Image 1 (cartoon, rainbow over the protein chains, first blue to last red):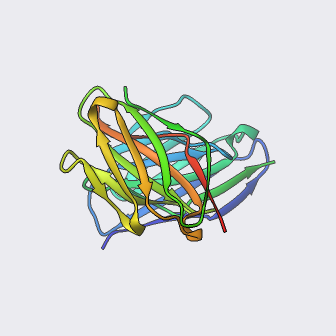
Image 2: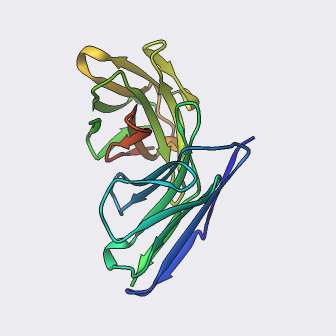
Length: 110
Length: 114
């Protein structure tokens, strides 16, 4: 069966520091992968999605970037974090129709 | 481009009462529609999905939703609320546009009173 791993679960970073969040999927090949951000009390905002290795579509211009170095690995990065980057970050892969989500990373930028 | 509107950021019901969470969507092509539930500090879990088969869709935990094309709606219902239903609920629409993108509504927080 397919599983999705996302880490770390919680992260506290100072403003201006770099960021790297990793997501891996097991049990499937060539999945469509997604990064969403959920700000406190708000819905999910699609940040990036990828349909294959090295292919990234950006939905919102911002301080973040994404990469897909391997088929089942999706990385969210920033060179310098802003206060506004705080939020709950969710990785997901697409099944036959629906998305399957990781457990999320709570990022606090102080 | 697709979009989703959830009416009411907070809904409060008594235990045993009907749950009705409203969702309207916009899509340029026949969409896939979903309801997800999120418990605090967790990822989202699929409740049910519509993928152009039966318009009345049954999901987990006694929830169901009806796709009404003429009203562009996909409201979520449950006949009798349980305390364990208290959570955040998200309606979502998915369509293919160079890749499948799923867009979520702002969410509705459901409170269940004893």
